[in-house]
Length: 188
Image (cartoon, rainbow, N blue to C red; front, side):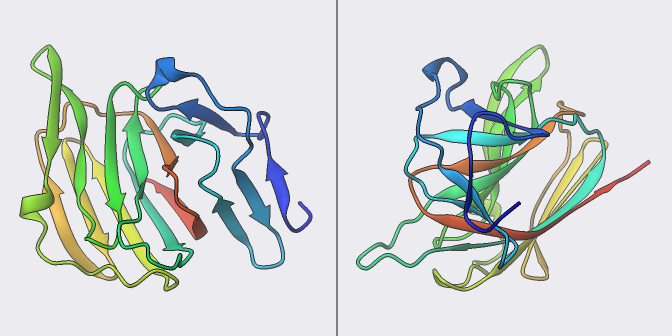
């Protein structure tokens, strides 16, 4: 793909999914590929959505590097890497990306119903680097256990996960964020 190619509604192997699923997509294409730098960039200007990889997965290890584009006066920044998402994102797990830290949170299907969870308080430390610097996430989902490692150290773990298969996705939430070196290892 040539440098700065905007990704619209028809991205081979990927689908834009609005958050929440019933909200509808905004027409702005906010995802683009910088072929020269080998980056997938979300401009953050097209609404809240997932860019969902269309292959459903069970157990896997996902590695991805990400960084926010620095914006003067901005301190919050927000995005995430989703996994074990249901087809339209009603059930979801997310590795939060933000300068305040990274942690697991989401909405799982447990004991016949939806249950929200947030492991922010259980995060062992904030290993997130400032905007403009690259961070490395490793998400391991195997059976009923999920582990999030940030920049080489495990930050969150959870067991008893009800959703044992689903999709991965990158979140657009109003901030420019770039991803690179996305590696997926399917576990047997």
